[in-house]
Length: 296
Image 1 (tube, rainbow, N blue to C red):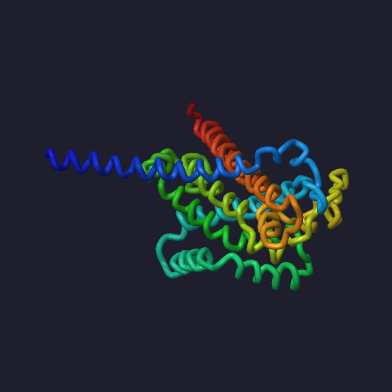
Image 2: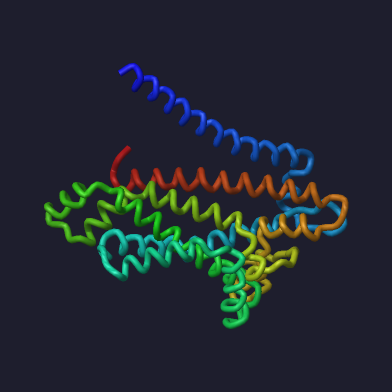
């Protein structure tokens, strides 16, 4: 009995140590880039265009990052959730579901640069969309959709079967049960899937180099609301260099006195943007769950 208690305390201590270590790594990353960006980051840096001769800013690049994130999630989240519902509630066991799961694992293991080359061949060249936000978003969808499907499926399967049985016993149809019982209870898991997917989108560079473009943008006219005009920042067909691609470009090709300052500050903005999105998504998920389940 005493030995079991000792091992229980040892295991608890190890788990706590691992948790603290992970938090410390995250804190070190955030602290490093925040300290590196001190004296550089400012409101002007966030709202100005990049410059070749002085510090400049990252306003259009930050816009592109948010735009591609939103565009990719608009495609990935609905399709991934629908796919997760099919796999969890309708597919059962058989050759087709097993083939789908195998395909998910294989696509998830493909290097992102290979997906970028595929997007270059299909979306940029074959479809004629050139380097654009839509090309980048679809390339990101290729290897983020399987992840979203798998996480949505796991979130739905985690809902206790008793909840389904109770709803069906009250006369609800299977789809009504999924819509009004299973999905609301699975929202936290689905939100986790969205957060993981968004993190990959925010941080992806290799696939976007070949699909969204490398040119440094500037002079966006946000009053141009014509979504078919490639010059409009609202258009899915405009060239969209993101923060992650911009950081890679600065560190690999950048010249000038402010290259490292701009790169470090851009990295700090990227980290803060990811954290802000995670907090927003979790808050929205809790609000949706309270609304759909009537809990407080």
